[in-house]
Image (cartoon, rainbow, N blue to C red; front, side, top):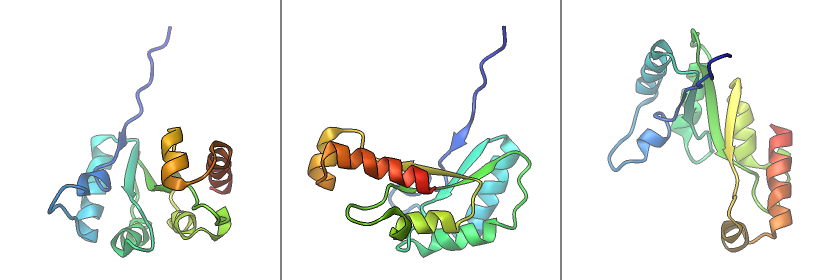
Length: 136
């Protein structure tokens, strides 16, 4: 019998900056990424490289020069927007532009969010998720 494997996924560089008054400079994020890799993280979520977040885009450009021992740098974002083809979606294009070895995206999983927030049918929501994953 083999022991189960645990994969470590760290969100500090994105989720950790959502507190009031918490921000990291590009250089602080680079240093934290190196430390998280040394600590043994398997995946390090570097941030949301959306056009409205130029600081994250700059981090990903600089992070291309880092050589991780174990970690895979991961960019984060959402599925494509309603009415926009995945290849034309600025958020998905930004994720691809990071050239990270891994990506993480979120889609709406609750029907209320799909129908009331995104204002799409449940079938349209599934297509948006499918098409976004397919592009990436």
